[in-house]
Length: 511
Image (cartoon, rainbow, N blue to C red; front, side, top):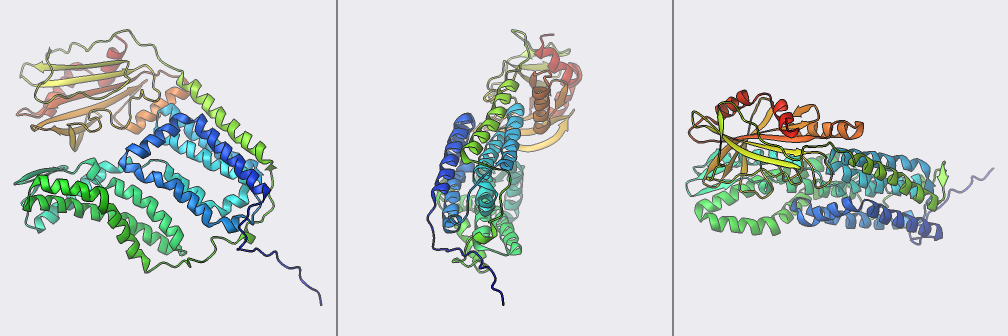
């Protein structure tokens, strides 16, 4: 009779980290500190977004949550052996590529994603595959440090407005809607971006992911909880918007909106979080006392090992390479004339800008900015705005959040997206008065003419990486919607001014 070798035992009560662990943790902390210093511009941007943008205020809690998740696993982690691992540099390189693409195309989301990927890659490289597999969820949860989801705001605005109307009619409120504007006999309401529910959905995505991991084992239950965590905030936000308008109907607009801001800011989101948790509570299937992982499953031999300091230095070297390439790419610029001028358009004469409601598109950092108003024989007027950039870099971008036809916190608001005009993106916008405009936007980058933000960013990326023409131009046409047909006036102006791409090139290059 032979005796089998005893399997290694792992004492869950053990929580002390040996000297090797402390050495690797110290190297990782140093690498993180230096990465944040090297990419300090993006680090500063992220901190500013977290602190000032209410949509991403939840990101302030992501790092504490990650540290808590790691702390919960400390007993099991202490029984693993960290080891520098060279293949982890591939994740660092992927982050560097994402950052470089974001830097070249001036897409902050890509730069921020690249920085987070490099931070994640440094964990894998310095601590090795066994520890990284054990920390897979905390490492993956770092993706919520990236501010994403602003694209949800416009569709959620429209959806919220559509959901509110049946509720108002059911409650007997005689309301009418016009895009994101809702009017009752005693009030005028805008389903603004802040009221779209986007901040609810984005924050609940992070919250729901955490709860799904901590409280569930079954993937089917996790998926069901995530679906519920995304649907409930959308429905709750529509109910909140309805409640505000209904309260204004039975009291006053001032009382209802003042109360709404207090409730929305302090209580509502907390109530929604509690409701989501209460709904999912019954189906929690994870034992609160269960170990987060079995250390015996993460003891595979490590190939392509490296000493911790060497692994850390290689992470910094790879990151520095992409940072240098970013500086080289950003140094490219196209020469522009010292001055440019708006064109003479046959059949149209220049007149002073409108005084009914001041409108000034926002393009900070433009090398040239022109705004003129034209009138034809019928009395129709059209505004032409052109912003020209010889190069783009951080703080000097053709396309960025809060700039364009409507700036952040503007008196003008988007009411409705209209059918495109000659390939341009058209919107209906309104200012107090009320005064309405139809505004159409095009972008000209090199030889590309588009109204798509994403296509414009891709054209910018191509020009930066391949060394093409760096000139970037925004062309906006706008007409006030009075008794005249604004679309017809814009079409007549375009017919007289010629193709938008040729018009943009003539203005930008002084021809």
